[in-house]
Image (cartoon, rainbow, N blue to C red; front, side, top):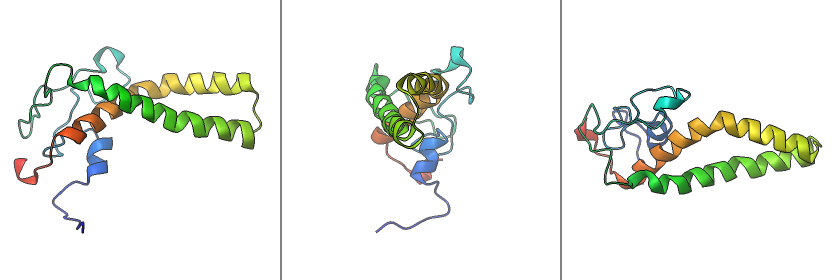
Length: 129
């Protein structure tokens, strides 16, 4: 049974706010704005709050590409179905809309997939931070 403890940050909040999975306080990325494309993948090597190693091993974040793919499919398929069946858009209009939205969402989904990936492998320890 799960109990809410006010001193702990919830898992989903930590993932979406892109915080350290161990203490759930320190930021994962040096620049908080995902739209600064030159710094989109620059992460802290260690959490500034608890010291957790955020680069667990070389190539660790390669697996986040699978998460990114799943996130993209999760919004593209329902978006296509809604645009086609409910709104009655043409195929060309849907493709233009989806590609435009993909360009806007790509930096956010890139960082979100890395956050999900590291949260899958690093255990939360409230006493750490």
